[in-house]
Length: 127
Image 1 (spheres, helix red, strand yellow):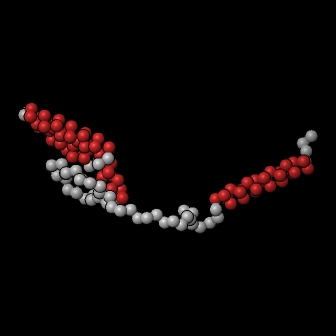
Image 2 (image 1 turned 90 degrees about the vertical axis):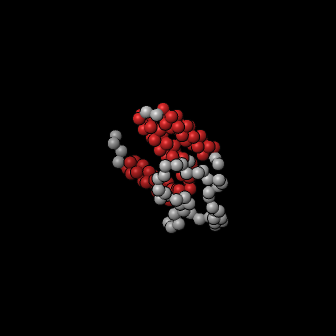
């Protein structure tokens, strides 16, 4: 379990403790507060960084039914094996000229255009 998971679990445990204390009060506000805090603790457990990462990669279930009791924490790593990276180096775009060629061509075109404008400016002086 990562450090972030431990922090989230510690916060959820504190919310659960507060919910138990509120339920022990015995009045209507305490029972209502206890229910809300238990729901918050359950929701907070779903926000563990490792579970969010697993859901983002498509490795965790996303259609669980809400339950009154908190789900048990995973006992070990939930990620599967990763595919090996491809050794071939290729450009991400795949098609078209290389970016350095485009930048070089634009630089040369700009210099040529500046020379032409400067040359034509000497042909018709304002003085």
